Amino acid sequence: MISRRGALIAGGATVAVVGAGAGAVAVAKHDKPEPAAPPSTDNQGRLLWRNWSGIQHSYPQARLAPKSEDEVAQALKTAPGPIRAVGAGHSFTALVPTAGSLMSLDGLAGIAGWEGEDQAVVWCGTRLGQLGPALAAKGRAMANLPDINKQSLGGALSTATHGTGKTLVAIHADVTALRLATTSGEILECDADKNRDIFDAARVSLGALGVITQARLRTTANRRLHRRVFAEPFEETLAKAEERWARHRNYEFYAVPFTGLAANITHDETDAPAIPRGPDTDTDFLNMLRAMRNLLGFSTPLRKAAAKTLLSAAAQPEEAVDEGWKLLSTERPMRFNEMEFHLPVDAQLAALKEVVAAIEAKRPDVFFPIEVRRIAPDDAWLSPFNAGPRGSVAVHAYYRDDYAFLFELIEPIFRRHDGRPHWGKLHSLHGQQLQALYPRWDDFLDLRRRLDPDGRLLNPYLKGLFGLQNA
Image (cartoon, rainbow, N blue to C red):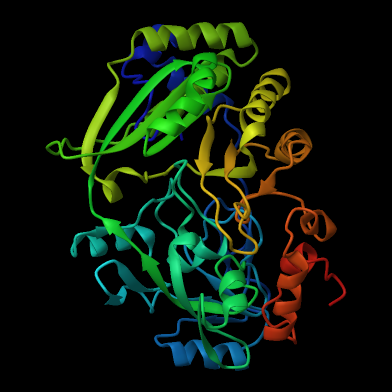
């Protein structure tokens, strides 16, 4: 998870710290066992669905794979509830699990057409990783991309998935129109002029208003980006972060606990010739951090000393030049669980410092870097970026490790700083707590009741989130 291509180029440096082969032995000896998997079927023979990290699962009564909007609308009207749409399963919250009907939109994928030169009409089952090359074939691109590109477009919109960049909005804010299938069997066309309230609510709706079948996306010219990845002391990164957000098209950094270091990533438009990104090294870097934790986790000073040795052995800063869709997202084969909050920009770095200090004081088992990004504002009702820019801080836990500390240690810090949770990442907020953070919260709930009066889209998690446990 560190900088998307290993901001600290470890190479053989682990040998210098822990001795030849010792890192691998440490990982094997001290890692927790693989979490137990739920049964593949329940007592009624229903097949297991499980999310990417493994912490959410269910046994749906029906699995739906519509191939047309009409099939989507008919299913929403007649299929067993609760009806939940699923994409790549990259949400860590229980948005998807249902004992009713699980609906995949994989059969509704690809670019349906264009409006003018710059707006693509896209089926919402399209995965972000597929959309990049499809847009590039016409010389266009999404303005920004999240760290992972496996999500479906519909899932990304519904959870306010975002990238980074002080002037760049989250994906849903580039939607200029959408089509929403509802539980009445209707398909509603929505934009800034037609069904405006539904448009503003549905762009970030958690799948609670209906199923978005199509979205019209504003695109940009498919420019090359110059990517640069470099490491430096954490305090130096904190001092320079605001200036870097102001100067670079995309800027983010990763604070690496127990090292005193941060990995910085910048992207800027360029006309320079392509320089391929090269093979991914993130997994190797994470395994190195695991090895240091397992060997030296009892001593923060030793871990930081080891990190300095690795830094001195690091290569020059990494650079690549290529089309944005090839650079902005990264493969993530090592699973994790995650909590991410979006904070007022004036509070972001202070909250980050508290998070790092709390982890280093109380959680020596943590080794994943902490991702820090900046997002421009938009006006979707449940967008975490509604009414002002936000700075995100994302804390990760290896999928084999305990993640309760995210709620007990980290979430209180985010809440003290008026953070809003990422809808697809772990958090415990619900009802009145969320109402206090979102001025249009009650309006959203009223609209939800109007569009889905029988609660056919509400699984137990959403009922709790909306404060409707008795609904």
